[in-house]
Image (tube, rainbow, N blue to C red):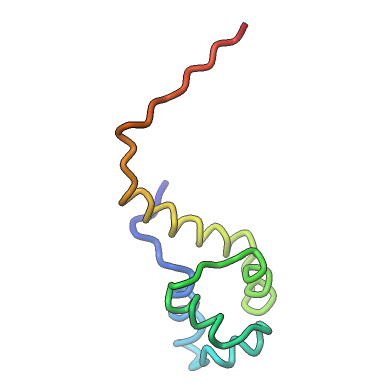
Length: 97
């Protein structure tokens, strides 16, 4: 089942981890071992979650790395579905011999 307009992982991090715990992005970046500007791009939705970032988030915040990457994939796939025109794409039929 597809989600309706899933949140960007950065939005999720802000709403679930940072805001409720009054934590700054700078503090989380320090814990993640990344620059504040790198994390800020994720938090603002300008960068996605890479496999490396997924590993860091998993260790620092919990959740599996796979769940962080799945969240990114769901976000990107939903947005692609809104803009990609598949009208000219045809199904390929494979015949077995």
